[in-house]
Length: 293
Ligand SMILES: O=C(O)CCC(=O)C(=O)O
Image 1 (cartoon, protein in one colour):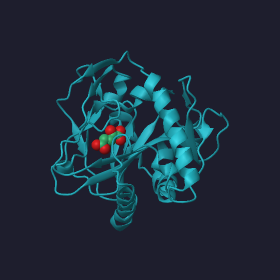
Image 2: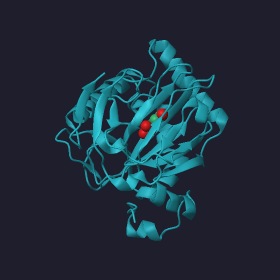
Image 3: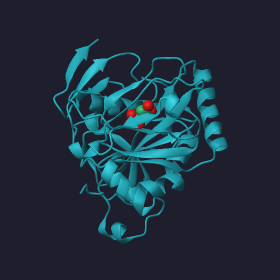
């Protein structure tokens, strides 16, 4: 059975948010969806703030501009620390939690924007592979809007080889794409409504298709890790402590943003993203081949 990375004391404790059936599903299938967290009005208000920032900058928070907004905006900092999310994450990885990474995932209607089949762990260099992604919907993300699609149980396959297929419509920064056949006879979609979230394991094979709805689809993919995980890359990276304590010191701390995209917030954000990219650029866990298209 897949190990849940919880401490013994935590295993004995009652789950804080997920049901026993949801925890079992995460172990068996590698995902849980949907989980209720915030009101639709709250999610839409957050999305409006994100879009106001995009307008003021004249730049959408899409590929190349979508990393680590929890370092820029106090409202994203509030989301990553919300008990509505952390209680569920704690049920899977224990009480000492850092945010390792966060990506904004916007898909405009009528565009070809997609996410290729991949496993999140491919460039994260985390040991052990225990990270869980909470995908928080800021808008409705039904099947026609290109919600995530997963191969249930594929997290048990471990790390698989990926190739880099560069395509500007692919939201993945390196175009990483699964390079082996994984039986995709039975896939499941993970539709979520604004304010809900899904959870998926770092080895779960997943993708998402273009948005065929009439509205923009926006979500935040928050990568949570237990503080005792470490990054094997020689490039030391930053991560934000959001619950419990860290007795391990495997990451440099990320400060909480105090002001919306203020000067010091922007400076630290730029440094943290540069360090993450430097780690990411050298990290290939699987003998990745680069294929230009
Ligand atoms: O938002 C999407 O369509 C894909 C998100 C994803 O791949 C992830 O959160 O790991």
